[in-house]
Amino acid sequence: MALISVSLALAGCEKRDLSVSEILPKACASCHGSDAEFSIASARAGYELSIHRTGGNAFYSNGGGCQKCHTNEGFVKFVTTGETGEEGFERAPSQPACFTCHDPHGTGTFELRVVKPVRLTNAAEFDGGKGNVCATCHQSRADATVVAVETEASKVNARFGPHYGPQGDLFAGTGAYEYPGKTYGTSPHTTKLTDSCVACHKTLPEGRFSLDPGIGGHSFNIKGEVHGVKTLNASVCQSCHPGIKQVAGGDVFDRKALADYDRDGTLEPFQLEFEGLLALFVNGEGTGILQAGIEPAFYDKNGALRVVREGVRPQVQMAALFNYRFFVEDRSRGIHNPLYAVQILYDSIKSIDPSFDLSYRP
Image (cartoon, rainbow, N blue to C red; front, side):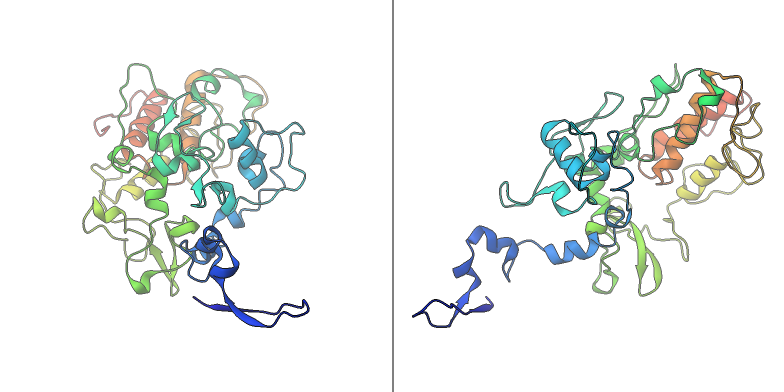
């Protein structure tokens, strides 16, 4: 135990060395002492490289209910009281940080502020262990069955869809627009990973020389750089997928898809097949079903969302648009739930193009 020299200015007191344990109660020393039980410094190093820290949303997303996820103060208030505050914004907002997700002094063990299952926007339940705290915010802000309906074309804008964070929904196998008469499954990721999000995103890379504060831990990043080399963290994947590794020079895992989902004639790693599948909706040639498959098109040939002032968008088009944006905004390239993802996208294409072959639909 390191010693701290304490000078006491009171008359008659002499200078002497005191140990941390003599100054701080044991409960405090477990975090603030020199032999702290919790690796706060390491966690902080990862956090500094996380989007939670660098995203910068706390100030411009502070209001209209957004503050409950985009600010530390709003989140703590919401999970504690179920409310976002009478004023509708936080007067002194800050980025989500350590004490957003953890209660430092409740039990002295940095307990998570959310441990019970989370109710998603569409009323489904997310029960992902330690990942429940993540799903409190990383979920769709719209119920597909409510918003994917016949809509005035002028009301369709860049904000239509799940609103950037449907990862919890996809992991649980819910949240997209599901077509009547179709059956949807879910990936073993949902059932095998007891702590869901945390199991993959917080696991550190294996090996002494593989460690980097920007990968795993409290950075929550799956990919980053180690010694200047692009690195994917496959550590947790290998427990179920022995031998899985990063494609040389790429940013995807080398695990092959079960079928040529994007119909380009080449069986590729799943994430690349999924990228190709999304390109059947919108691509740089302007041939996607949301570009050339409907009139007027949702997207132009450059992939930009078009503004249409007149007319009505039928429900079938709105559902396909919602599902496309659902998976684009998830940003895992289908990895969060491969089975559900491919099934939904295949059915979405079929709804717009009746000639589309479903033989590769899992």
